[in-house]
Amino acid sequence: MPRHSITVTAYHADNTVCPSEHLHTRSGKPLTEGCAGRDHFMASCNFSTWTSSRSSTKNYSTAQGRRHRTEQQHAESAAPPKGPAVLRQLLRLDADD
Ligand SMILES: [Zn+2]
Ligand SMILES: [Zn+2]
Image 1 (cartoon, rainbow, N blue to C red):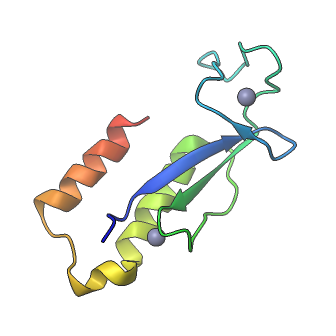
Image 2: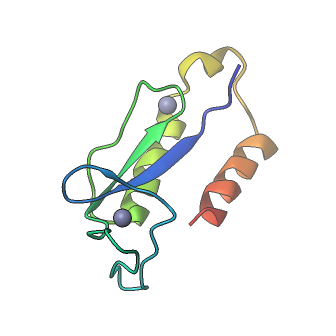
């Protein structure tokens, strides 16, 4: 059973993925040639049944993903991850930013 994890993906304005190799300044200006800048973010979960709505900040997408994971346990509800495992996932999500 795969763990329930959330991925936040950045997109350009034309809905193509802005991969993590594309570098940006702190204020979000693109530094990579050919990159139009990150226009919006969407969170999705590894069960592929859920994606967040578009949001203009990564923090908001991350929060949406976190809420989804709290509310929706998918098939994992048979053996819900409890305590430290959940905490580890939250910490990993935080460290991912
Ligand atoms: Zn880009
Ligand atoms: Zn999910």
